[in-house]
Length: 447
Image 1 (cartoon, rainbow, N blue to C red):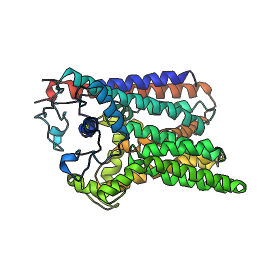
Image 2 (image 1 turned 60 degrees about the vertical axis):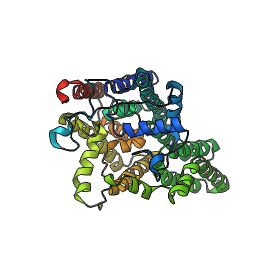
Image 3 (image 1 turned 90 degrees about the vertical axis):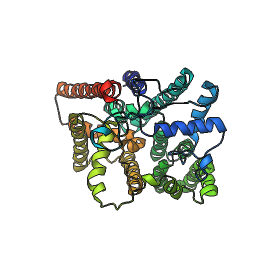
């Protein structure tokens, strides 16, 4: 297990770096808007005000600031004018959401450079490498979470395998956005919150959980999904430690205070500028072209949402316009079905109850609920929105595989199946890279 971890880390590093340098600038989702936000913070030293056009940043200016502060610092260190400037030229062959003309790159990348200068190119790829580093740090934290959820089991390597070979995860690990930092803090929040389940009288767990959640909320407010589950864990700890209720209550209050003090700046600023702590109405007002309100039982949620969420969770790159071969989605659907079947078998035979796995499942449900609520207003069925709970999804699937494989008495057969799984997933990664290269680097894709 310990020996395999450097290999899995190196695999993700290689996969993510290839994506970072093979995928052209501004082709990952919302990368132009994230880049503009980084530039704005680096140039002005201020955060945008979305109510004032001259002080706003289109697309992502409503986001919390932590990632953009870090990116802005990189800009100041690498750019004479503190700004990474791009001169993109639209691909005349591309038309938004229109048949075959949608399945080509958005910008021209073969005819001329998209960067204003070589220095701008350096600054841009420094920001992409920053994303790769954050993804690697996230993976290291996932290892700790796997040890917690799957202690002493070689099947935790299956969970790690799921993460490092997931094409969409590697693709987003090489893109400029705030997701990788948010996912890092989500993993650490989940880890320290679940540590409270095992050690409810250890103050460090509460302090670090509050620190991780506060920093996460200062990175991306969608991490609010973790708060109700964390409170449920605190209630569980209080119930289990009724004889030490005062200590648990003190630590729970400490957790809440730390998370609030770290993130309060952003939410108070929202209230002062926009009259609301979350800025929800401000987003609707400044992004009217994206608003598409619909009920939960609409055809969108019954058909489009589950289909596109799953496809883009596995790998649907760019602006959802770079699909993988259908066989890739079928294979992943079978792998998910196998893991779920194993979990059902485990429940049927009444496996020993592990509250950490139960609360892990609650984190997944809370994250999914947040995505559903968001899609009531915006049609964004993007599987990457579940990446904050990706390690928990991987751990639960690995637990399901463990149950299925435990029914095989032949050790050789188990090893063969695991080896076959590794070969299949790595092959799908190679196919993903071929798809990306052909999509962005063939002349026939451009007008």
